[in-house]
Amino acid sequence: MIFEIADVIISGLINGSVYALMAVGLTLIYGVSRAFNFAYGSFYSLGGYIAFLLFGLSFINSYFLVFLLAAPILLLFGFFVEKALVAPLRKRDDWEIKVMMITLGLALLLDNAYQVIFGARMKSLPPFLGGAFEAGDFYLSHQDVGIFFLSIGGILVFRWFLNNTRTGMSVRAVAQNPAGAQIVGIPKEFVFAATFAISTVMVGMGGILLAQKYFITPMGGWDILVKAWVITAFGGMGSIRGGLYAAFIVGMLEAFVGWYFGMTWTLIVLFAVLLTTLAVRPQGLMGKWG
Amino acid sequence: MLRVTQVTKKFGELTAVNNLSFEVAQGQVFGIAGPNGAGKSTVYNLITGLYDFEGSISFKDQNISGMTPHCIARLGIARTFQIPQTFPSLTVAKTVEVGSYFGSQTGFDRGHVNEVLAFVNLADKREAPTGSLNLLDKKMLMIGAALATRPEILMLDEPMAGSNSKEILRLMDLIRRINQDLGVTIILIEHFMKVLTELTQKLLIIETGTEICCGDPREVTSDPRVIECYLGDSHD
Image 1 (cartoon, rainbow over the protein chains, first blue to last red):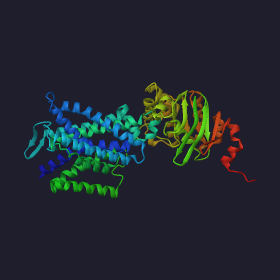
Image 2: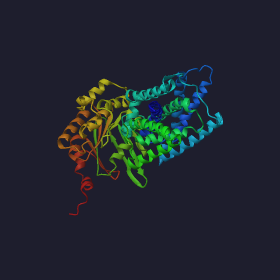
Image 3: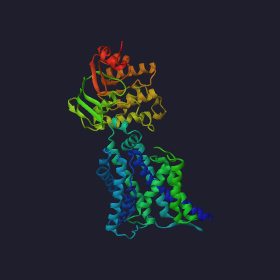
Image 4: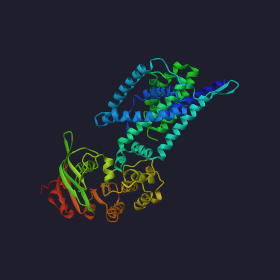
């Protein structure tokens, strides 16, 4: 029983860490530009498919190389999408709704493109690390440990970037005060595009990390979009700290509900969390950038 | 130095600025006044590129109409807002650094940041979070962030609003030092006529986005059209 509960806690922590990486990206876009990206789940799948393609190349034999090559591809893709599809809408009335609609359209386009290019069957990636820690009934795979530390590492790198780089400083300034940021010379449009690109890298990396456990499918991103949205709303729209707390709470909740009631109950419980949050505390745990 | 020529801005049916023209000379303290809703802040928003408009605005003979706000800031036009637009999670020093990093054409200069902090009397609060400052210090800070961009023109939007008489004297002293010691041209929106007559060399009065009169502050403030604009029509 104790080992079972330990397993559940570890599973919750590992999923929570990857959810945190992805939810921070989603809340970052909303916190900075007030835009909600409905294609976020499809960017998760994109990360998995890019890794799948890279592993097909003869000279790629390690995850280090995959991350090294996938990150700039995702960054450029996110930057291009923002500049080509999202930025032109910002000057129009009700642009937030229009951004939701166009990213929804992009999600459908990407998911169907994945189906045409890669087929409907699920794709798998090789394990990140082999072996496991074992002690009696206790079992913890090295892969899970690696996923946990890579996700936490990704979040720490992101935190360092926000606090210690010129672009990070501009992202924080635009998030807190877009008008004030512009008049001290910060290019707001570039910051919006950079934020979108960074969040694409974060969710794409999440896609590569989780694809080792849950496979890659053309429609697999929708589940992630829903979870990231629940976490973002639960933590507080635009609050990075709130998103981190919410990601681990949701990861843990999902693990315990799956273990006790069965996996079919997890989404029901997540939606119950979302509804309760919106009804009782619409601003979420933190409610603002933090 | 700054030339605003036949500028008009409409928001739907409302004409906020109507065929307005004026010129600001280098080294001048230029005042803009008018009743609430006269379009003063809109004029600032047009000059700093926050809104598009009809007409033209040029800075040092370069047409800046249609430029983005950050490009205009980097050209040398800085501004503040009536309500200080701070970055609550950044410290005082970081806020000024933002101006130096992004707005200065000569690039980031830590020495200049320190000089600016001392100039606006915030050197001893450099590590304080912006959110913890009182209103006067927030105003000083955002003037500091603007100065860190090394502006040639500084546009101040009602800096005295919400200040007591002691604070007004401090702000007036700061504006004089920015103009005289740093050689920065100032454009000042203000309601306090005493402040305008003491600080400015030229004063523009607008109402509903249209010029009422423009010239020497003492002559302008005694103009019957300005008195009527501020006090209403007399029935005596």
